[in-house]
Image (cartoon, rainbow, N blue to C red; front, top):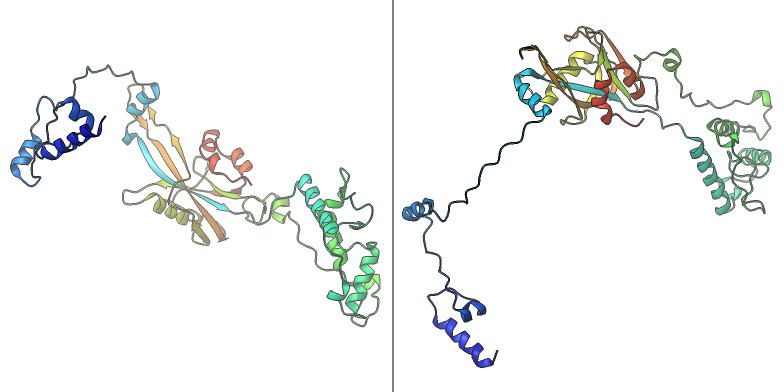
Amino acid sequence: MAASSRGALAIRGLLRTSSPRLCRQCATTGLQIRAPKSWRAYSGAAAAASTATTPIDLPPTTTPTPSEPATPQQQQQQQHGKSHYRIQAGIILTRAPLLTAEETPFESAFYFYQKRLNERLSMPFVTSVYFKPDTPALIDWNLKVRDREGTVAKELGVYHGRSARAWDDELAAGDPLSSRAAVYDALLRDATMRVSDDAEIIPVDERVAPEAPRSRVTEADRAGDVARLDRALDRTLYLVVKGADGRWAFPAAAVATDEHLHETAKRVMDKTAGLDMNTWMVGRVPVAHHVVRPVLGEDGSLQKRGEKTFFLKARIMAGQANLAGNPFGYTEFKWLTAEELKASVDDKYYHSVRNMLADR
């Protein structure tokens, strides 16, 4: 397009002050576009005009499509009204693990390899930095290092990180040197003092061995007492109670009209297990739910109401459960692991809560 034609279009746009601005294509083709009517939003006449509907503003008519037939699940939901269910709130009271998990053979071998690798890469151990000369501590250290044939580490066996065989730092399959028991024995043997404060060698029968760590297996584990909290120290325990019907489940009760779910769960926990526990509610949002369908007669009449139970999670910090005087009819309680819980409750009940159980 020439420059003169562009100038003519610009002048034409300036002269048409009453018309809306047009693009170059609309101006050359002569397309007529009506400007919108000016109106004031606060005017009553404008409001009346805006509410009036013209045939052009009506949406296009569509032929109604026939509704699809309801599925059996939808028919069952329509049949079971809201009044056929009782809303309940339950509490899943847990005791967190007190010990770390038992190491697998692969983990033990890996950590042992890392320790020997550290012996190869670390600087030589300088005794003058840690021990004063001619002291009982230095004499005791020299005796223990001589028994280990010069190995500085206490639980690695005989290994020299700077020798020609330093590359051979892996254990053979089945070697018990990396086991927990072997590590305990090595550390306890090294912690026994062999030199007295007078720099004299203590006889073997007069040496005092340090106190060994307690066993991971407690007296409750040996006795099989599932009502105690000092059992399965490396696992998460869950409180379950035995109801009047003989079934084991988490404590639960119906939600009152003036209560929230977390308030009902707190009330159930206090009235079921007593106030002799220091507990903590993790949150106010349910972590699992369980649905029991209502029982209907042949004529569709309600025989027994169903239940929708929402479970909230809590932690026990101290204390113990006490079912004395509880108003829900619970007679016994247990602290169970996830595997023991699966064997104690119904299959459908466990299927509803299985996804919130901890891995260990």
